[in-house]
Structures are given as C-alpha cells and as structure tokens.
Amino acid sequence: MPAAANPATADALSRPNPAALLAWYDRHRRRLPWRAPPGERQDPYRVFLSEIMLQQTTVVTVAPYYAAFLRRWPDVHALAGAPLEEVLSAWAGLGYYARARNLHACAKAVAERHGGQFPADEAALLALPGIGPYTAAAIAAIAFERSAAPVDGNWERVVARLFAVADPLPKARQKLQALALTLLPPARHGDFAQAMMDLGATICTPRKPACALCPWQNPCAARAEGAPERYPVKAAKAARPTRQGVAFLAVRADGAVLVRSRSPKGLLGGMTEVPSTPWESGGSAHPSAHAPFKVSWTALNATVTHVFSHFALELQLWRAEVSADALAPDGHRWVLPSGFDDEAFPSVMRKVLAYA
DNA sequence: TAAGCGTGGGG
DNA sequence: TCCCCAAGCTT
Image (cartoon, rainbow, N blue to C red; front, top):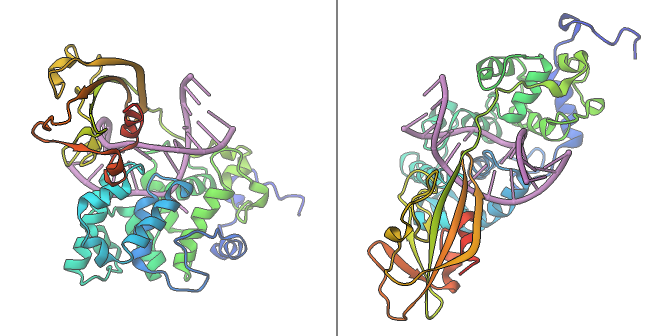
C-alpha cells in the first residue's frame, strides 16, 4: 500500500468501481433459495415472491415460507387461483399481512392483465399492488436485466458510507437514491443489485463493518473519516406506547375454540383471532360487555405480551368452558385444535391459544 | 409527509 | 431487559 493511502478529504477518494464489487460478488455471493445458479435466468415469479417476503424481513425467517409457498403455488397462475384465506393462512407468522393481501392481488393482476407474464419495465411493475419503488427496481434488475437501483436498507447504508452522507434518514432517501444511480454498472444489472445487498448484509453491516474485507474500502468516505458505523445517520424515533385488552378463550366441550376474522384491512387485516375487548391505552373499563357469551369467565393468571411495530400489547386472558351445543355468535365460528394449522392465526394469537 | 403496519433474533 | 434491526408499501 502506498504511504499516502489515507485520504483526508473526500475529493482524494476514487470513484467506486462497479467492476470491483462484481468481482467480489463472483467470489462471495451468498447462496440463497430464491437465487438461480450463476449465469442462469431468474424466474420473475420467484423473484417477485421472494422480494415481497423479504420486505423488512430477514433471510432466515423467509426461507421456510418461501419454500412452502413455491411448493404449494409454483407459478403465478396457481397463486392467482388460490383463495385469499389460504394465502393468509400460509403467510401467518410472517407479519405485515398487507403484503400477503397485495401478493395475492398482484398475482391476480399479472394473470388477468398481463397474461401471466410479469412486465419488465419498472414503471409497469410499480403500478401493481404491493410493488413499490424498491421491489419494482429489484424485479426489473434481477429478473429482466434492466438497469435499475433497488435501494433497500443495505443500499442505503453502503451509499451513505461511501459518500459520508450526513443527512439523517428518512429525509436523506432522495439524495441516497440519486447517489445510488451513479454507481450502476454498464452490464450485469441483476448481479450488481444483489451484490450491493450481499455487501451490506455481510461486510458493510450496521455494527462493526468488516472494512478490511471490503472491495470498496479505498473509495469509502466514511472509512476515510475513521468511523463508518456512524452512517447512515438516523432520525430519533417515537416511543412505543402500550395498549391493554382482555382476550376471551371460549372452549367447547370437544376442545373447539371460538374465533372470528378481523376486518380485511388495518392491523392483522383478514387474520383469525379469538374475540377480545378493543386494544386501547388504559384497557377496557368493562370487559364483560365484549364477552361472546354471558357465562362465568375465569380470569387466568396469565398475561400475553406482544410487541407490534408501533405499540406493545398486554392481553389478559379470560377463559370459559362452554356447553357442547353452544352456537357461535354472529361473525364467530368454532375451530377444533386439529384445524388450527388451517387458520390464519398471527403470532400474538398463537401465544393466546397456548392457554386454550 | 408521517404514520400505520409484524415478527423474531442479536448485541 | 431493552433496543435495534431486516431485500418497504400504502394512505
């Protein structure tokens, strides 16, 4: 290394060379279930499915869901023909359930409006439900070899460090997007998009980045400053409030549990739940008013806690044994434990049902 | 524009 | 325990 290899100012840095990153990718690319072998064409449906699942969700979490979906619905026509309830049930536990509703709506749109072929243009992809700027660019680049910058959290971190962008997220998004476009290579667009993600996931990590192993250590302004982990700068986030409620476990003599479906949109939209009071800060003054049966409820000595993205929930559990011939109230139904796997129970409800 | 929208793992 | 984080989109 030359003695003057420690540039003190940004203008002493060379421009990041896409070929250097691609060469690194050829040696270190991660083998992931949704990736075709090197040089092979990616199936747009698989790219689509994996990209939707990977939104705000880790590789390890997604992998089994991806395999199950692909086995059950191997192409866009199969998914488009599936009942939404089955898609939600298969998605249960993965979170952000609007993704599942939009995944299904998108498959139907592609089947009906595009003859089962995903469009290759970013703009056309962007018009589909559940596909935003990131996903449109990712599908265009990875499935269709279009020049595009799918700027996800990895890209944002890498770019913020390369150029030492001090503006805090999320306001810095536009600037980072513009800088990202300056990095794009003349070819291998899909590989480059995934190389950026791999770099962010394995080298340019949020904490303790492995700069010594980075193909772009030389042109990186944040490294030149000496504290790359300082980037990207993030705005302070709001505190997470707590809400309380009472969940009612009505258990029939044969073990069936009373459930209902949540409204189709909003929190846990379309998912299955046991009846409960509204989830409110301070809880409900008169839980009994929300009970599905006028019987004697036993307050269990148990609190289910669950953390959502924007609030924490504390659920008290009330349990009651109900006679074998009890009718389910309007909008409710009985589900036997043997049928639990076919229900779209979100994680919080699985915690609740552990007490049934 | 900012808030709503899940979950599980790691430091 | 708590906070941060993960291949974002919608309204």
